[in-house]
Structure formats: structure tokens, C-alpha cells
Length: 397
Image (cartoon, rainbow, N blue to C red; front, side, top):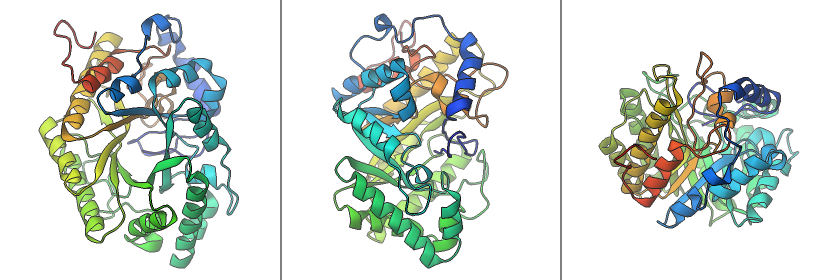
């Protein structure tokens, strides 16, 4: 869902983004005492195949968001990604503020470091995100507010330069991220109509989404263009309304012959909110009926304050929801699954104070634990990818 410039994850309490640098190190140190004593990345606990290989056997794709600085500085982190992830998504390095901190001055170092790391291991990278209301430098916000003409110029210049730079390496981009407003009942509702109130909306109106996709298609006719959003996965009145809004936006774009190829569902799940397999499957099928691919782009889980503090019980609940969601998505036609991070201690659900658990315990909502070892969520994903049922003698052993 989101991420602001380092060192802050900068988002509402709904989707994700990790704090970087000092904040990240501080969070890791504070939580280390609560973790297991297993050796980091213990090969005995993490034998081949990895999740990406398990998924591939069934025609599926698995990958994860990644941080360039950790790939370069933490060998256990790098080993985990090499073992588990077939697709890499930059957590921050491909956002507007990272790529164009000053007008006309583009910096691709961190982004290209991720791409090269993946290429050296025959892994692909996808882009996230070209047009978003967060992770924008101050100069861009000011420029967009000057006039519609200036706003379009900023958008076009950014998309043109970035797609030109990555044309030979990136074949899938989140073109517009989080365009739909949160309805009443959401964690952070927006009372601004069905489209999220953003600098782009204020400058260009609802047509900014169409404009972004048309510019992207003109710059790269063969690129897969994705609309990415969150808050549509669970069975709540707010999610029902947001599904309606997102589907209406998608259908409007399709009717206007806007070049849209895929919809990304972020899937920042919350265990204390109900999930209905038939409801979610129906929504996925409705999107696919419009001729679109559907991707799960940022999967992770938050346990809520009501979940027991003991790790075995919490991990079981995370695994159960992961399996239910992932197996339903596969059955409905989703073929790509990306988690927002692999390792608990680097997850935005730990490092972002807006979503972190209180009271000294921490979310365990991505596949690997604090020691870089697989836990029940990993096994839930593996079983879902293989089309297997849970172990009748115990969940995801």
C-alpha cells in the first residue's frame, strides 16, 4: 500500500511500508529478545525448494518486496530472497521521491541495484509505483498544485523518463496506486467521494487515472499496466463498498478503452476482520471477466489486539487465514502472489508505528521469522501453491 521517503514509512494505518535506516535498526534491536534462538537462515529448517519454485510447478508466480540496502548489507537477508522469491518488488526504490528527488534529476541507483541482483539470479523485477499520492517530493506536490497543465507535464515527464530507463528490464508496472477512496467504516475513511483526494485528483480530476495509463502505453506498448489498490479482500461493509468502487472504476476505464491490463490487490489482511471465500472469489472473477489479470501484490497479515500473545497460536491463525485467502485466490484465477516482505523483523507491520502491535509483541505476518527461518505461514503458502489440504494432524506442520 504505501511507503514514504526514508526513514519514515509514511502511510495511514492501512497498508504497509517499512521504516528504513535508524528506525529499522532500532525496531529490530528492541524486538530481538522476543524471538527464537534458532540459527539465522538455518539450512536444516529451510531446505529446497523455495516458495517461488513450489509455485512455479503449478504455473504460479511468487515473489516479495525487497530493500536494496539489506540485499547488499545482510547476507542472511539476501540468502532468504535468493531461496524464496522469484519476483522482486522495490519497497521504496522505484517510488517517485526515490527516483526524482529534484525536478529533472533522476536517481536510479537503488532501483537498478535490485534489478541487477535479480538478473544475476534469473529473477524478474516489477515496478511500483509510477503515480501515487504518497512518497512524493515536496517540489512535485508544489508543481502539481500550480495548474492542470503543469500537473500533466510533471506526470508525463516522470513516466517517460522512468519507463525509458527500465524498458529492457521491467515488463510490469503499477501505473496508478490507490486511486479509490476508503468508504465509511474503513480504518481511515475518506469523505471525498469515490476517488481518493490526492494532488493528482485535485489538479486533473478523475481523469488523471486514464491520463497516466495512456501515457504509459504510449511510452511502452508491450508493458503490462496495472492498477493497484487495497481494502477489498475481507467480508466487511467497508470492503464491500470499496469492491464496488474499484470495480466501477475498472469498468469505466475498460469502457473508455483505457489501456489497462491487470488489477493488483494488495491484500494487507487483518485477522480480526472476517473473510468470505465465496465473496472474494466472486470479486476476482468479476475483474477477470473484464479481460484483466488479477495479482496479489502486497500480501501480509496483521493479527489485531485480540489475538493471544503466544507465538504458536498466533502463527496458526496467520497460517489459517493465509491458506484460506491464497487457495481461494488461486481457485478464482489469480496466478501471481507477492508478499510485502519476507522476514518479520523488516516488515512494515513491525517498523511502522501506525500498524505495529502494542504491548511488546510484534506481528508475524510474512513467511519467515526473525531468524530468517520458515514458519507456519510459509507452509500455508506452500500447501496452497501445491493445491494440498492442511495436515489433518495439525495445521501446516
